[in-house]
Amino acid sequence: MANEVSIGLLGLGVVGSGVLKIIEEHQEDLVHRLGRGVKVEKVLVRNLEKARQVDVDERILTTNSDEVLKNPNIDIIVEVMGGVDDARQYILEALKAKKHVVTANKDLIALHGPELEKVARENGCDLFYEASVGGGIPLLRSVADGLISDRINQVMGIVNGTTNYILTKMTKDGQSYEDALRKAQELGFAEADPTADVEGLDAARKMVILARLSFLTNVELDDVEVKGISDVSLTDIEYGKKLDLTMKLIGFAKRTGQEIEVNVQPTFLADTHPLASVNDEYNAVYVSGEAVGETMFYGPGAGSLPTATAVMADVVEVIKNMILGVNGKKFIRPQFEKKLAPPENRYSQYYIRLKVKDETGAFARISDLFKKLGISFERILQTPREEGYADVIVVTHETSYENFKQALEDLEKLDVVDSIRSHYRVEGDAKR
Ligand code: HSE
View (spheres, rainbow, N blue to C red):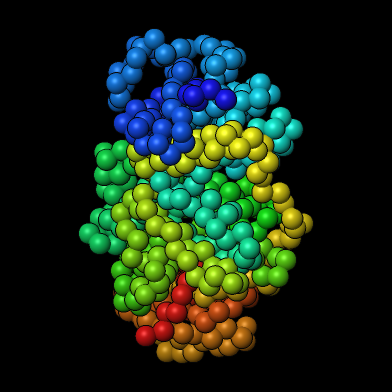
């Protein structure tokens, strides 16, 4: 093995620039820790003329993927270009050419992770993707290695910085959804087209990866129920405050026996829940294991240098494996057949806000309906709103998802209920 390990970078955007910077600025530390240097040999870019966020020797830039993927000097390909189709093709090509791959691409791993891991295994190559979830938080390796002897039964997290920033601004500053989104775009958290973030898809992809590693089963994107934050209103956030609840976009993955559920949805957390105080663009993931109990991982979920540290952790692991001659051995193989929990086996508390006719006996009718379904109330709030109507908010005790859906269906038919304004999952002990 040479005294210097050569890397081919696919992409030189926000994360790629960070990788280049860390390799340059921390070269001495890398040499000390690995006993050899790390060098970026070639960088695939779309446009050679584009201004860069980092000083780079222009001779290493290329628009020809062959100069990176077919380069005999390159040992490790680092894919930080994003997108799915080209990235998949390049990674397949790299693995077949026996180059190890590090990627930060959650979309690709969520959609094609098992296929790429198979090809990596067949070619004796490493394929690592620490940076795909939680940016700079050392999360996936903690779940996969740190908790390897445990059985994880729940993973709950704030895994999207853009939506956490928006919800924080709505909650703390009373900003409207539109204003908070605009601010997130100005600060560069949210994309020009923010759909994947605000509609929960980015979080869903990350939860697929987390659930696969946590439950050792082949979770796919279609298994995840997804709801974003674009419907969340300031009114509900304000009612939440009265009930000591904080609104967050939560990725939730739970295993009960062999059954699992994975979803992403705006969720009211008890203010005392550790995730309730994770604000702005920060991410945090709360992992519960049978033996370890409760653990929480917190940090920057995106950004150039934070994400680059996760990419470099993978690069260093590949190099250590090269030194030991053990590449291509470390894969988390599915151990269990996937069984999705049916609605009757999925339990939660719920917040339901109803527009109710302000007349005698209205509340008794509602309470009767819940009683018939065996759903008990934990909290109730009633405020007069428009002329002749009141907002009635109930927070239920735990009930099955099946029961909850039935309650919504029955409430729709109740003549004292004008409409169901909103409903959210509630997590944590909401008792005060
Ligand atoms: N768009 C993501 C977020 C960052 O807002 O968290 C990259 O995963």
